[in-house]
Image (cartoon, rainbow, N blue to C red; front, top):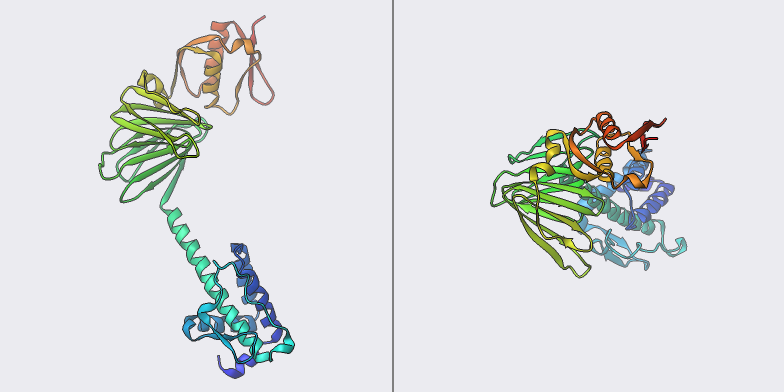
Length: 350
């Protein structure tokens, strides 16, 4: 664009551009701001002309200068404030102190800064999107069991209403158990540890099989093959609680203790959900109901606290609450009452 064309850009558009630059220089600039700025640029040829000139000037950044508050004094373009600057932007002098050309040159310099800021914002957005693209998201619905085969040969089994994020890189395999429970059959790769994060804890393995369950800020790790290192930070000073868990052992994690000592368990019993089963062995009724409710959108409710300590043993299909309720009625002398919202309330039989 030549000198004559520059003069044809209306002063009102330059003032509008100045306002946009002020907004774009803010550290709180949002994607919505940039979208609105883009729309403004497209509203008229004058807007677009100013934008084209700004881009051209930015491409030759080392040659661009704008007038300072004193006429005939200039500041190198490299001194323009950037998005990371604490300066809100150069102050605009009163009109009486500068001729129109000085004001326009200054605005063009500011527009260069705005263009650089826009470019930086979009580059950051693209990098963040590219990074997000490396993360794969998987989820299971209530009552659903879902199997996931990973590119490294590992397999994840999701229990009901569970969600994981998977990121595989050249140096490690990161899994974030966002909610619920999952079983991991880890392909052996000594150079890429397999790390599961959940409930503020980490379980690290190389080639093994284990399950992780997250409930609030408490977790459970059960190992069915190999060895898993489980760790958790326990205070603001960075102290870490850590345990090595071997096959047939289980640990619990919480914010106070960190990681409990490993205890021997029946691993097949703890992972019976993989076969679609719930297995109870002298289990309190409150725990039975809590487990069954994970697989149904229509919960079972205990009508009396006295029922919570009743004991239950047996094997049930995990998404067949109807059969479970019938068995509880018979074995514990209970009465089930269906509610309008689909829930079932258990009370002692009369």
